[in-house]
Image (tube, rainbow, N blue to C red; front, side, top):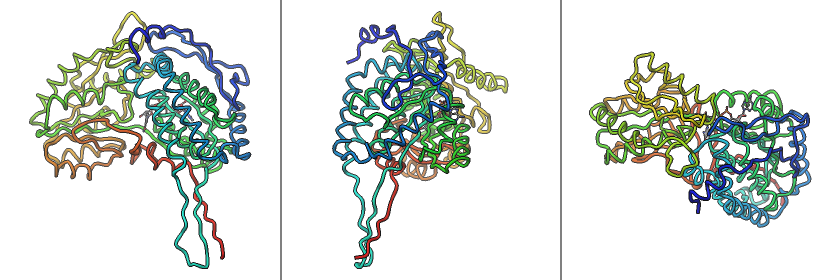
Length: 494
Ligand code: NAD
């Protein structure tokens, strides 16, 4: 459906300046401020977005609150809400090519992955929660027969959603679809460097029949728009995907304002553990490489620590190095590209500083350079750092770039100890032919998802979320609905 000709016809389409979407209307910032959108493909200004102010956030939360109080969406029959979300999913599919290319020009993800992980994933998520809307029942509690006790599930009110730049449509839909399915009103704040496709997604939602004011999008800087949303007295629940430091601020904002519930999906330093009895070494090499290098490592669940049993360490590293040489890094709008651009100059500088520090500490670095093409874009080689000690910064802190830290281990107990030895707990993988060991590792690993003999598989039916400092609360699956629904007991004397 998306061939190279179609991509090429969209790659240089003009991108008009984008405004907020508040109360169903496209409006500029109240003080007229604009932010340049720099494309990571060439380092040039692609377009501008509205630079939101506190007043813009107030206008958006007021519109969301009004629609909730007036019950324009909350009291829409579930079957009607389902029809709107289903139509929205169909419109997203219809515009998938345009959405994917626009998103890539904004954030740099390789197009093959962007198409699947962005519009098509978002459409799937909208459809999944559309289907769920009219299957969520309340309860009748088994009380004394002199009483009828009912447990209602009610929308929480106004949801604030703050999302990152790596997969704006996919992650945006993980928040929007269940929040809106449950009957809430929403104010969404996209990342500064990935707002364009989300604005278009929201516009399609209105075309599908969302009433004005039920979904609002305010663009701009985190420290202004995000903070105002976090401090808003009109936001009942705040859902977030992003970095740990910003997650901590959101908890503070909640404490300083109305004690809104805050659900955080944060970073990771996920261990990918290869035992000597790995069923297929070449498959493990290929999947491990994709598990860190796709989207230039800008994936929250990326397998960024490779733990390899010492007896196969050198062989594994040699095969991985050979595989990395076959990966095509560069133009994200070329369907043959395996890894596209790093999102921003700032992120690229951060990636390179991690590598420089490891090199200075005497670790061996394979790859590790900025790829200087004549494009002026932000491209980086897939990078392997070997001889890493478990306590090194590169083994403890999230780089969020195409950088894999390799650590040898000797026993299962060692592997588990190293794997669990960071502040994070998002994802993990185990490669082994031993079923009992696989189950022991699943039980022992402190992570929200553990893959066995693969890396990165998931769909809407299963929750995604972390433990420890990778966050609280889960996106995806029916469990995600709990964040967006309150329980209310009705106690009726008969
Ligand atoms: P970030 O935390 O810098 O920004 C995320 C969002 O928060 C952006 O919209 C930003 O504008 C906003 N923000 C920034 N400062 C703010 C403030 N003071 N108050 C309120 N909002 C503020 O993260 P990022 O760089 O956009 O994304 C990368 C991070 O996201 C990585 O740590 C990655 O692991 C994480 N991530 C996690 C998951 C997951 O499911 N757990 C998924 C994807 C990304």
